[in-house]
Length: 203
Ligand code: GLN
Image 1 (cartoon, rainbow, N blue to C red):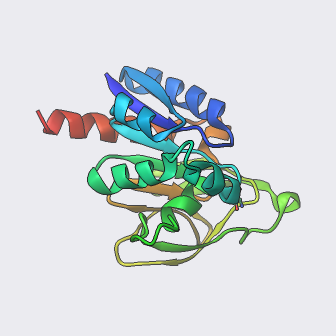
Image 2: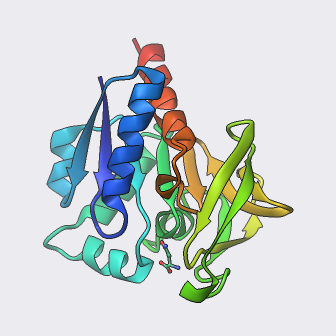
């Protein structure tokens, strides 16, 4: 049984649950999704992997750093403590991974421009090359951030033509699009398979 912590600050959380369920069926890996709203939820659920959905990063920072929740500092601590555990950050979730804003090291080695692909009106869909999956993937971009620089510790995991739209450092995957809004659960399968492998290796 793989436990997934889903950061419930804002955004398309329920689509992530559907995508995780579909990934579970595809891979045959049993999962339990734990909704994380405050830091104590993280302690009690002891997840093997974490998903940080999109939304509006400014709002997510406000809600997640509010003393009533303190979820974001706890999530960042967890990510730094369990270096190899898989994390999937989509859109605003990718912004938080690249810019945790807590004075600590970025969680993926890349610089990101929050609204680099323009406004809501510039949202679009396009086939992308998911190098991490070794195939094409339907990319859904909504007020998408843009990676403006990728460092030595970042592996490119998705590309839209020549443009980098996915990076990974350790097993933290930051995607500027929304894989949970397409009918392809490939990136969620990656999350489950990586978490399961890590679990098996630790036994
Ligand atoms: N551009 C948004 C932000 O700044 C992210 C958009 C999204 O997650 N769909 O947070």
